[in-house]
Image (cartoon, rainbow, N blue to C red):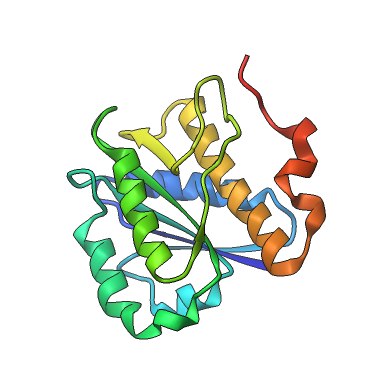
Length: 185
């Protein structure tokens, strides 16, 4: 069974809503166990436990939040070599479009890569003109169906990649499932 952790920091509740949707997407892949934890409730043991990790943060000047950075510096620092090769992705929310959300995702991905996580983006479309190339990004809360679909797509893809690479479930490889993928009009 694939073990997915959705780890997030949320100041206003927007990233928390995204985390729930990402978990829903991951749960759509059979044989997936999911934990959803805030960065203040999570421990290094939770990150070591998972096979796949989605990390979310509010956008702070185009970067991850200080709470998320502190978690990786302090809680995860001593566990540097224990998570190498796990699958991971990122998500973020900001006050509006153009607020630096993709930059925040890239800062999260940089932290993850430094710990040895295998990170990914999604080339598939959740809706016309909406794809999580660098991670799921939303202006404010994921209130509309497109924002919600982007979050679910990222979670589903995390669970698929984890199942493929950690457990050899080749039938879940996204390239083999082209007929199920959405394409822009």
